[in-house]
Length: 194
Image 1 (cartoon, one colour):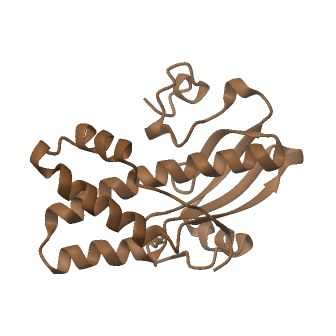
Image 2 (tube, helix red, strand yellow):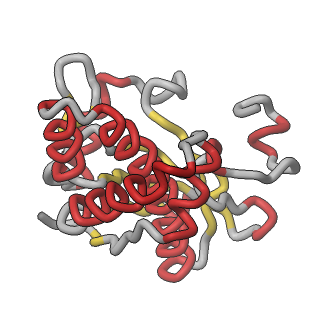
């Protein structure tokens, strides 16, 4: 599998944050940490991103995934009626996706000197039709990511997007909007995310 590999970790801080944000019971903390280790291990081989920069136009196309191992882990939890673990894996994988987006942003800064000013997703942005996603993934060479007939990405913990890039540090996204706490962000002011 090509692409830029991501070394992602489910840290104690991430487990603590997930416990609080998703209202897990204190007695479930050890199980949450154990599931975190499972999710981290499942993502170890498959977590990566692909990017095609058009810095002259201030844009990039990108795809990102945690890989098929996370799907397999959740399916195994579901098959064995371990539904709490399945849910824990879901929320921890979501947190890893936010972390992965942040790592991709850092890579863009280090390699192009530009910051991600906005994420634009297929199906959310009227200019990015879901039916155009398979061709975009092919152009990126995003091996291991594909769409089903309904244009849902497989593996499930995957993203395909366009990025608006800027040299202005005031426009920098830390990660995707759902993980951002910036109240002064132009994306929020424009009503793109509340």
